Length: 204
Image (cartoon, rainbow, N blue to C red):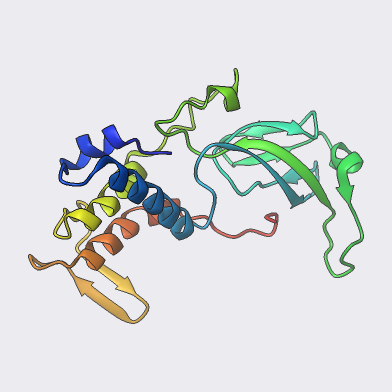
């Protein structure tokens, strides 16, 4: 779980809910944030079939930030571009799945890696000795999960600083004193839009 019960209580000050109810809502809020951001968000070992792009064999896993890769061997993790690259496309040949779709110009490869943000759980068994200095849970995302959870127990909870309106399709709502729980939740989603994944050609 990315946001622990203790961190939730400290961030929001909410104390009326039971620990069981708050924990369950934190998990639901984390899932809602993940769906909004269009990508897996918590650190885990993942295996995906990905397109291999030229010139040196580049793949873009779905869960970022990237921490390490185990299959295939010899790949380099680029934490800036969130890509894995080989010395050539041949790096992937042993695991390649080629020619399945004649309309797709890219080969595909099975890739096993560790990716996602590090929250309040203990991830040492997953990350081992890998560098995780770039993989901490962003403050905005932590606060979004916590305050979206809080709207279940305190519907008039705080709207994030800097968000004055929320647009959903053709509907726009401007923040006022009588903000509804739905508006508060949407405003927290809006505050983390910058972390939303852009669907790229190299993704699964």
